Length: 131
Image 1 (cartoon, rainbow, N blue to C red):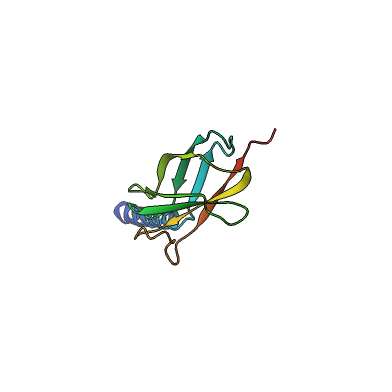
Image 2: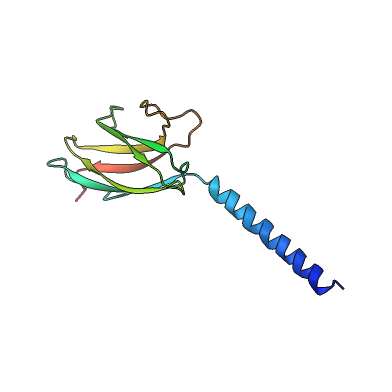
C-alpha cells in the first residue's frame, strides 16, 4: 500500500494533468458565433446581436456579410476579450432580400483580409424573415 502522503501526491498530479488537458483542448476549440435575430426586415434595418467565443484572446476579429451573389455589402471589426470572445451589436441596413452568411475570423492588422490559417466561422442571416 501507498503511504497517505504519496497517494495524495499521485492524486494531485493526476488531477492537475486532467485539468491541464481540458484547458488545452478548450483553447484549441473551433470558434462559435450566434446571431440574434437570424432574420429581419430589409428596410429600415435592424440590430444584430453577436455572441462569439473561441477566437484568439485580445485580438481583432474581422467580419463580412456575404450575399448569395458573393458581394460584401457590410463588414467591420470587433475586439475579443481576454478569453477570445465578444458580445456586441451591429446594425444591418440597406440590404436587399437575400440569404447571407456572416463570416468571422482573426484579422490582426485590420487589412480587410482574414489572417492566413485563422479559423473561420459563419452564421446565417436572412432578409426578410420567412412567414
